[in-house]
Figure 1 (cartoon, rainbow, N blue to C red):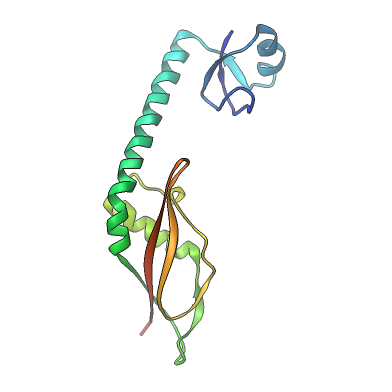
Figure 2: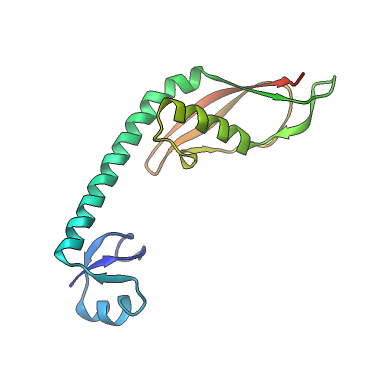
Length: 156
């Protein structure tokens, strides 16, 4: 029996997949728990279109990542924060603020980018100056490491 999975089931597939299962498994395990429903020809066609659309979006995102790497490396992200005379910041610059700035830059280049595309592991920065940060751009199997430059200036 062909069924459409309504949620991810590790032994069968991910949400939205159309899979073949035995009638008993479908009727006794999947249908009562609302984990699947019968795959009619319309549902199979819609699932196929959705999968094609997802492949197209992944390819578009991959192309966008490759085109944005060079501008991202060349760009300097500037943050103005209040600091003391000795150069220590009154507040730390946190990873979330850097990610928001990077996402805003990426969306300016290509609106396909989202916050889930930017991954970095940065401890809060507590001093003025120029820092180089390595971030990961992309999702799933298409992730690229990119070095970015941030500059923290004293707010006047």
